[in-house]
Image (tube, rainbow, N blue to C red):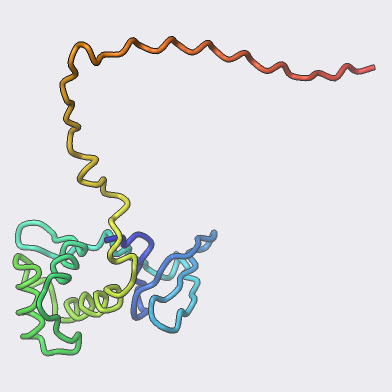
Length: 171
């Protein structure tokens, strides 16, 4: 999933897409139906990129993108306003090794509401541009070539002549 450019702004509900950057901060657009624009001043607002957010785990922190992937395949997602017990049960389903003491119900509500906002956007189903595709990571398998199929190497191309610069004489 491609979450590049999607941020959460402290003190502002919902998610925002970074449109541009100026010398004082970022120009953001909300991902909800209103498409509200906001200039987030870096000296006062705290921005958190969704692609870099992690959830406290028992051993290691869990990437938010991994939790979203698990939520995609979940049978049913509870409402963000559900009680804490339902949210905790759901979170054990999608992130079984999250730290119960450090992950509060408000955090779970926020993650579920973010998922509800993102799931219908086309970028949610795009591959992450920062991760190399699996096919590119696999080594190429070379097929053996029979002796009679080997072609002679092509002659080396002659080096190109340099273009002459036109010079203007001062008179």
